[in-house]
Image 1 (tube, one colour):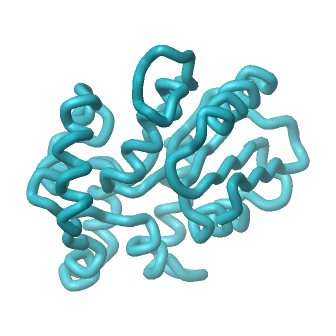
Image 2 (tube, rainbow, N blue to C red):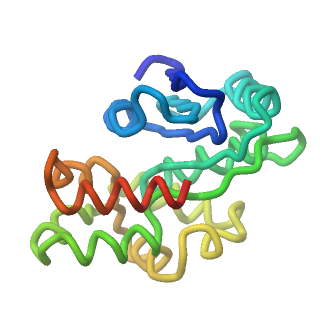
Length: 191
């Protein structure tokens, strides 16, 4: 993904959705195209202070609710924390953007468990590498309400050194699949 991807339907936005992966950005554009009242903001990696400021200014300009759609992993949870704090150093000295979490968490896990086979679900759950495990241990100290955000089952997955990425779910959400239909409905109602 380039430093930032921005897409807006033909109608005035009623919500802003922030995603962290190009594949998810493309999938969401396809889901909402062309006339959805949505502003889709995508940025790979930890957002800079300028990106945090731009996200906040964009949300204020359109006066819309902001949603975060990301992976269940330390990297994306750090992105969420940086955006809400307005600072990639994760300090709380700047004003950030208030986000509602709509990423991989307990609610989405319930849906994908119903639609994926046990083997598909196991394939979607990945092992964290040692750096991600360390990152998560640090993140837990600064992200005090992580369980409130992702849910208790999702927190247990992270604590076991596992992660779930959106791409691992979307690969089974092809055109015409029940998973795609239910995932689209879930996202449209959650957002």
